[in-house]
Structure formats: C-alpha cells, structure tokens
Length: 427
Image 1 (cartoon, rainbow, N blue to C red):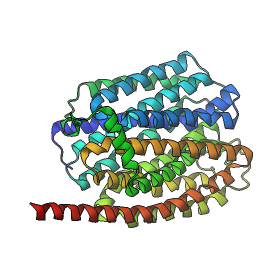
Image 2: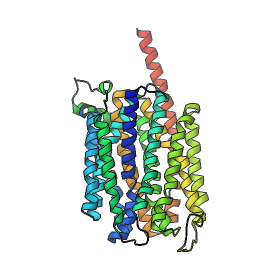
Image 3: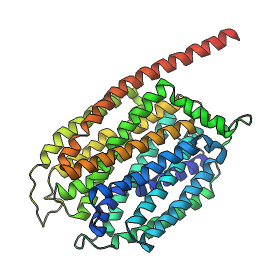
Image 4: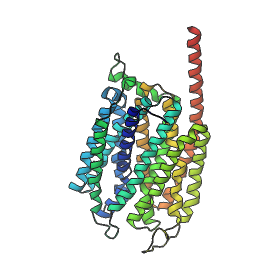
C-alpha cells in the first residue's frame, strides 16, 4: 500500500500507540504471576486484575464512544497516553497489589479512548474496503508485536533465582518513557477528522441513542457476540499461559513468561500475513478454517502436558513439547478478530465507526474479563489442563456465530443494493 507522507505519519502514530498499549494490556498475565509470588495473593484474587483492566474499558466505551467525534480522536489519544504515563510511574514508586489494580484501571480507561479513536481513524485513512482490511490486519499485527515484546521486556527484569524480588518493577520506568515518546509523536501529527464530524443539528444524547440502536440490528448483534467469544478464548490463553507454563509444564518464572511469547509471535505473524490472504480469498472460509484449527490445536497439545516432572536444569532444548505446540493456536486465532471487525466496519458509513467500535470494545472487554476469571477459577479449583480444555466450548460457539454472521452480512449487502436501486429509479 502506498500512502502520502501525512498518511504514513498518521499510520506510524497509530501503530506505535497500539504497541504501547499492547505491552501494558497484555502484561496482566505476567503481573498476575508476579503478584502471586511477591505479595502472596491467591489465584482467584489475582485474576481480578483482568477485571480492573477490562471493566473500565467497557464502561468508558459505553459512556464516551458515541461522543468521540465531538471530543476529537487526537485529543482522546493524547489524554490516554498521559494517563498511562502517570500510572506506570506509580508502579515502582508505590509498589503493591493495590497499585497494580490502579495501573490496570488506568490502562483500561485509556485503552477505551484509544481503541475507539484508532479504529475510527483507520476508517478516515482507508480509501476502500480492501485497504481497510489491510490496515486493520497490519494494526492488529503491530499490536501482537507489542505483546511479543512485552514478554521479553518483562522477562528481562524478572529474577527467576529470587521469586520474591521486586526488580521487575523497574520495567515501568522504560514503559513510562515509551508513553512520553508516543505522546510527542501524536501531538506533532496532523489529523484530518472532518469526514467524521458529527451533525450540528444533533446533540450528544442523540449520538448515544444511535449507538444503542445499532445494537438492535441483527448483523451488529451477531457480530458483537462472535467478537465476545473470540476475546474470551484469546484472553483465557494469553492471561493464564505464563502460569500454565510455570505450574503445569514446570518452567522457571522468567522462562514461563518468555515461552508465552511464542503465542504472541504466532498471533503477530498470522495477523501481519492475514492482510495478503484476505485480499485474495473470501473472508468466511478463512475464518471457519481458523476456528477449526484452534480446536484441533487444543486437542493435540494438551495431552502432551500430562505428567511432566520438575527439572531444575530445564532449558529451551529440554522444555516439554507442549510449551512449543500449544502456543501455535495463535496462528489460527490471528486473522479472526481483525477480519470480522473489518467486515463489520466496512459495512457502515464513517460517522458510525466510533459508536460501532464502542460496542465492539464493550463486548471485547466483557469477553476478556469473563475468559480470564472463569479460567482463573477453574485453574485454581481443578488444574490448568482442564481450564484450557474448557476453551473448546466457546470455540464451538464461535463457529456457529460465524455462520450467522455471514448470513446477516449477505442480507445487509442485499438490502443496501435494493435501497440504491430504489433511489436510482426514483431519481
């Protein structure tokens, strides 16, 4: 894709913002492992960090998404970056479980502002549906690059020889500096938001009601439920894989976090390449094949995690095979989320992208919290294998959701063609 210099600078800003928030959002699994070791928090209580992250995302999205064009996408991004810059500074200055809760609360509030703004800005930058799909997959691919980087950045600050050490908190000095750098880039980049300007004849209340009315459309309803199921599975795996590696596969703490980067690498590689695939193939068979691949990976990998004995000298060459096979589920997950998002947003006019993204963010946040807390509960009461076997249920429901989503997309497209034909004959 060729973009003029101003558009390239906007895309660079969006990609860097997504990398920053990818590191912060997906550090929750690592932080759960560390607060268990540092502060004596049990698994059920530690899983609440996911809720402190995701529930503010849902609440803030619900309240402000419809008004985001009035607030301004650039202003919202700058406010979000300022919030997380301050929150990351608090982690090493006031260490404790309460500060970790506050951090993820701030990250949740900020990401609600960022995701609605970034997704809506993609709609302003993209010139057609294919370009929209390509940018979305690349954007989500950079998000996973941030996730991948997070595991290694945090792993570099964790002292495996002293599980109770708080040296890992020094990573937040680095993250605060990255937030400041991104703030400067966004502040010095010009954004043209005129195409998404709200109608002067309508107030914020009318915008909010329009967002609620969107959810009444069958297409939107099926879409957000499918997105909910996807995020439920992704967060279940991403959040609890470090603990699974540590307790079930008997890997050291730092290696458990770094091994989880295989999952993030698979998601990043899958999403960065999905743009090319989606431009050549119909989205629906690709999505179905991916969901079936997810289920097959669970059934193949989890039996390999049975009965593993502790080895104090374990390394990459002697790690259990399951540590390398199970994260491959990320390759099949990768195209699903940006794929269905692009299909949905491309079906709507630009001024509806912000409220639609608001609904998406709400249900994604609820899916992430549900997945993490249910998996954490089952992990604590039973074991990690059983907790991950349970992901087969939402995977099966996701497959059903895709069939209904395709049907509604086809009906919506047919209705749009009929409306255009009627307008043409009337003219």
